[in-house]
Length: 61
Image 1 (cartoon, helix red, strand yellow):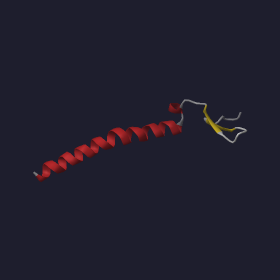
Image 2 (tube, helix red, strand yellow):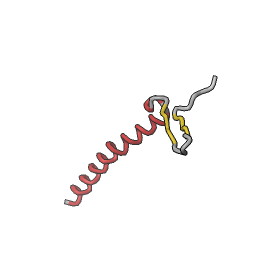
Image 3 (tube, rainbow, N blue to C red):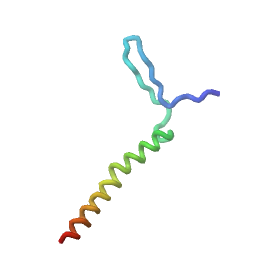
Image 4 (cartoon, rainbow, N blue to C red):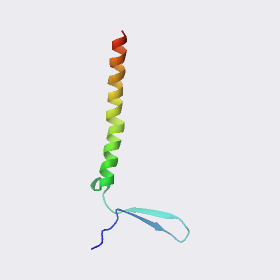
């Protein structure tokens, strides 16, 4: 029983490359890790940075 890859790359006659996604990215390990990294980068880090800046500004007053 062979396991199919979630991403299939097909090279056409005119040397163009076509990428087909076979599985739902949210169900793959790579998709889950990418989703977590995006959430951390766009939500958690800005909030932590804002809180750090506010605390630092308030401590200098």
